Length: 379
Image (cartoon, rainbow, N blue to C red; front, side, top):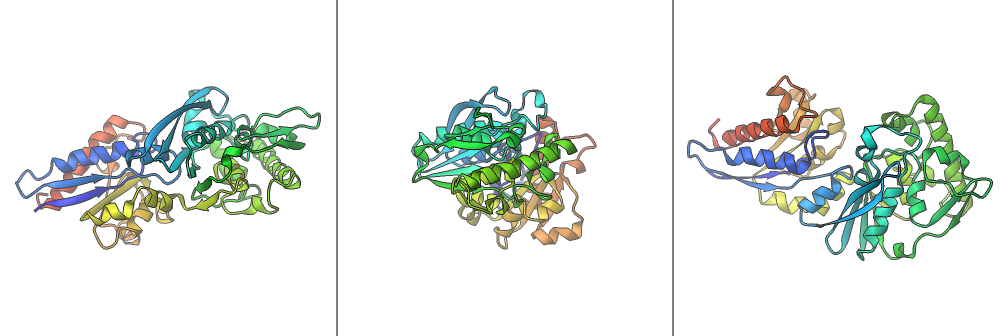
């Protein structure tokens, strides 16, 4: 018999992009059927949820790729990529000012800036989009979006009237704001794609929850949290932010860039579901018999609504197979995502695959072959 499979994974963070995961699985699936029982037709749909890889996923689905040079998280030039299909532009934090863009991977919790993200948004606006998707995830900064807003026309001044750069270290020094946002933003729909619901500051805010992941010490967290609160207050007093906006769900995403995006009037959406819609997942899965999804680690967070869970929820009654670098779910938990099975790289090797792209791809090809043989009745 013949079978059609939709391969719709997220990235395996640290080793393979979503496209590389999908390609390796497809190679293995296509090699199945050695007993002549049929063939496997593969439909490839690399996915993202608003984090790193969002632009690449859009490009893989047919968007054009546009490059621009922006200020990296600590000021060094970074070649960033924008996805554009003539109507919608996708800009992501990760490939402009994300953790992966830090020189030498050295964390700079106080001195990283979101300026490069704002510069990428400016570049996207020159393409004439009706809509810009702001994909928030993987940020290195906790600057409340101060750097981004600086790139978009605002100036932040200290008590002596001197301009401040947009970093977490500068947040407590903000005394006033001047300038105006660029006119190119007028009439453009802004979409904030993120699945983070934290407020800007406080015990569940950007600094307290995510700052330590970016290298912030307890003292740094206190400095950043107080600075974020002051920043929101200054913007509210200046009439640029709605009172209480800092408590809106998602204001604390990407080190507070979410707050700045909401200030710009961006409409918040679930990153996972928005990208599934943007990449036409529902129509693609309707033409396939089986869906394969996955990510680097399938665990309790996956069950809480990460991308593979959204894929499973929208796949209907067809069999759903998950592939992961590792799986921490007990077999009885598979039913919570309607999974037929989970294949993990850790079942095939004792080596650490999390930073080994070559080994990860090799094992995914083996897994693809195993899935194909099982589907065709050869395994």
